[in-house]
Length: 130
Image 1: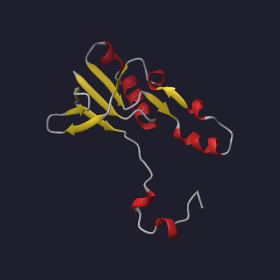
Image 2: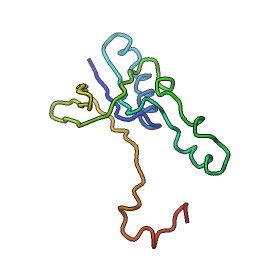
Image 3: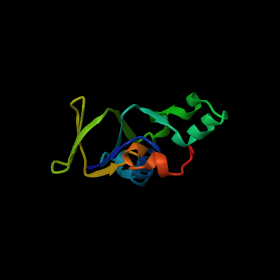
Image 4: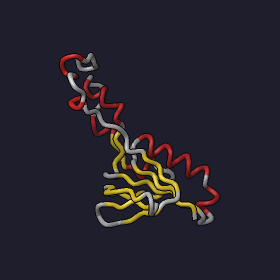
């Protein structure tokens, strides 16, 4: 059985899981493949919409949806926090004790802005907030 595991249910992880599930539709339906997304909260937040909140054009509750509703019905969703990836064993361990095996692993954990990690950022950088 082919096991595809996607870590992250943001825009990238959701899109990749849906595209893979369409490509593997016959194999999934035949029980020969499984596509699973692991998401920490089970809620998809459309982060690009945050700028509209700041400008008064959107409300935060309109930018959130249950992740399950955005995934193809052939994609499994596991809500949990990844503790570690064991490359040698081709498995992912979640904080709740679950272990998920994979043949292909997609890391779609997104990015986070950490300006405090950039030396002299506050004094010298020009960015959206200045």
